[in-house]
Length: 232
Image (cartoon, rainbow, N blue to C red; front, side, top):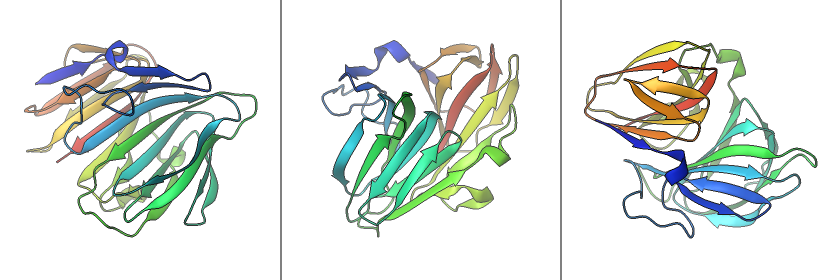
């Protein structure tokens, strides 16, 4: 079964310095029909003005992934990490027993766009961790590129949950045939472009929940970028 989550039906808030869309209930946006998908709790599509960002704030017992679409994120946290995350890089924080962090647009002239993703961990009270990785050297057109996994294989960042997160950068008229492992669920998030999935049309910002399917055929109508979540 394929269930489309249209981009214009997401929660939306524009704070001037932040223009954000919420796939699932978050902050002041609440919809009991869209709380989570499996352990996937948050997908926020954030656009941040030059020099602005999220000041120091706390988290606990959550796996937090940042995926840069355009620009760069300046990151600081209570574990002592200070870094800049560019397009082509992914970041994972395990909040565990508790941490604080800030995320700012590193540029003083260009807008930042990134996806903020929260995953409910398999275990509470973990020791807080931070990791980031550049995946561009592994990226191939119309192929899955593993970003995040439970075992850190293939140079992916590790997450404390039974989840695999892939990015796919598709060429115009590109095709990807994805066999869904037995008993698994899939969420597709179209970051940019336009694709069809088993005949279902998706546009930029759309999400697609997949269950009780064995195979997905993804065909791009134009150059497209998407995230594929393989979930228990």
